[in-house]
Length: 80
Image (cartoon, rainbow, N blue to C red):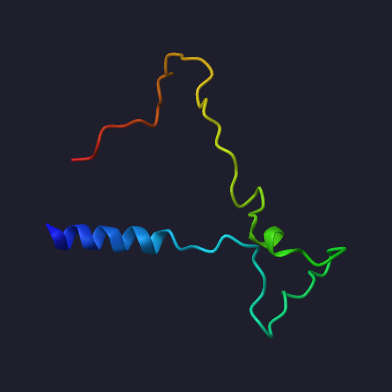
């Protein structure tokens, strides 16, 4: 029992020690070069934000109204 509590406490302490400051490049390193068509070099937060194409929003209403399905001429039974 003590061992499980010790492991749980260590996991919580490890999870709680994240950095809370602004992101910067490592010492001696620079940001990536400016993209060809960009007017200015993007900041680290801009580089970490995904584009809308990468994370599209979900449309929750998939069906506007219900209706009876029409007969499908290609819905054939399996071959034997």
